[in-house]
Amino acid sequence: MDKFFKSVLEQDRAAIVICDLDHIIQYMNKAAIMRYEKRGGEKLIGKNLLECHNTHSQEIIIRIIDWFREDEKNNMIYTFKNEKENKDVYMVALRDENNKLIGYYEKHEYRDAETAEVYDFSKSLI
Image 1 (cartoon, rainbow, N blue to C red):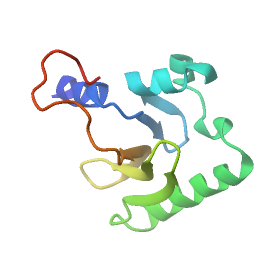
Image 2: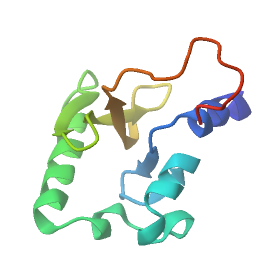
Image 3: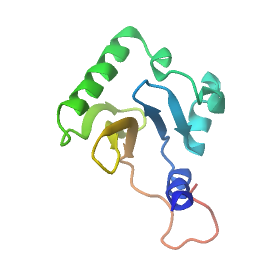
């Protein structure tokens, strides 16, 4: 089943960066590797995500992780609206089969309407 889950992540057009509770980047999908190319791209895997953020952002990330830990129902929080890219951004808790917090990722939801024609096989969307 893991190959199916990985394929879902790889096909997403939004950047997906998954971190463990020590903030170590465990996974980046293709979109994330391309998006963060100037910062190291794939070489960021294994690095501490907090090192990629300023002190204020680091404090917020740590506070969100604490909030995730407070209650197993605390699983997603809206973090900001990126006007330039017309998207909303959330942080999402990752939990194991026992609902124990194991990590987190940032979720991007783009608000632009799709421009491709329905069932247009002449071009790839990804």
